[in-house]
Image (cartoon, rainbow, N blue to C red; front, side):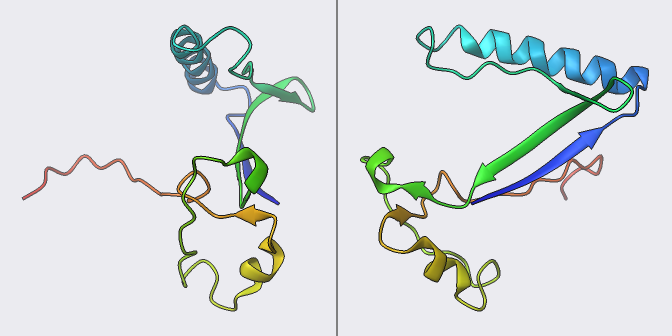
Length: 111
């Protein structure tokens, strides 16, 4: 199970610069990984060649692929009816790798 979002700038120059910078950052980070261990990234193209960024994450990780992961509880605010626990079953875990955190950029200085 995945959750994802697609963001597009509808061919604006600002968005084009942002996607170019993401690609530069990816290439810089890729130098820290063994060759072939990091998935290649490139912006998604759709409709009339508009560029988009697809962002997503897995709700769960297969236990066979999470030998070093420690399961954590799914927050009640995310799973208030317990449905995700039922869907997770016995073969998957929910760990810090699956937890989604939200951040906000603010121009206001902390007081």
